[in-house]
Length: 286
Image 1 (cartoon, rainbow, N blue to C red):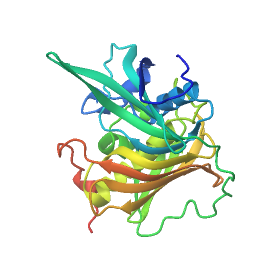
Image 2 (cartoon, helix red, strand yellow):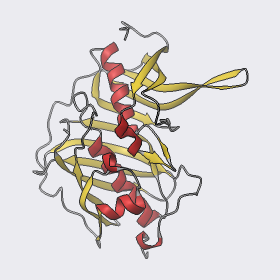
Image 3 (cartoon, helix red, strand yellow):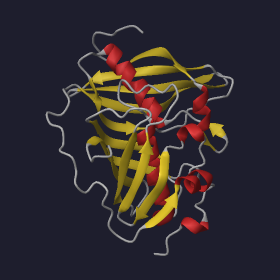
Image 4 (tube, one colour):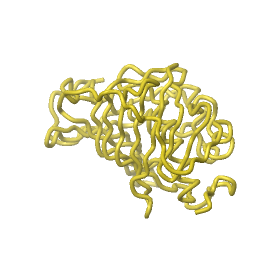
């Protein structure tokens, strides 16, 4: 990868993403799609390789406007990396592909995030005493039920473990750090955040009546990096569910209540145009 010393305008160069077999477990309507949490690792790698001063653990204004499909026979996915201007201390990086219709070609963006040109936060939050507290009437369901009927992903992406607790005030989930070839060195394992988003999806099916997938977030701060084959607790808090997209905040802790990362302004919407509907048994009687 060529190192770019400065950006005056958007730079674009080809990039190849390894499509490990475990990615086939991340499916939407029968088609494997590249996970948003894995895209964030790719984007962070581009930023880190090109600008050493960028802190890839401070992520802002992420968006995931289009799925990036992965065919089973693909060993690599050929995409483009777009690096935007550093503006007010931030660098934007996007993953895009070229679509061609007849003689007309256009670029399609699949993932975008901004990284801060600053050091990590100057403090580490103290352990939380109430990270397992969930107010309101609880509804509990098993991980098996989630991955059988609510979020039908394959084994590699079944990283809510045990039971998930839901209430109108949010969700508490036991999360696993995952396995496989996923990179957990740069910004941590992708699997705990992905599983936390499954909890938010389950919450949306019960209390909002829609099957909502993540399409972006406002800010993600990684205080400590999650690791594969480790266990965590995820908290989901609904912030605004009066309209679509649904807005959530999320936090990921270790089992002692030490905060590893916080994600604010998670945007989730139905991307199936109504084809997917929650099963009747999950819907709350509000």
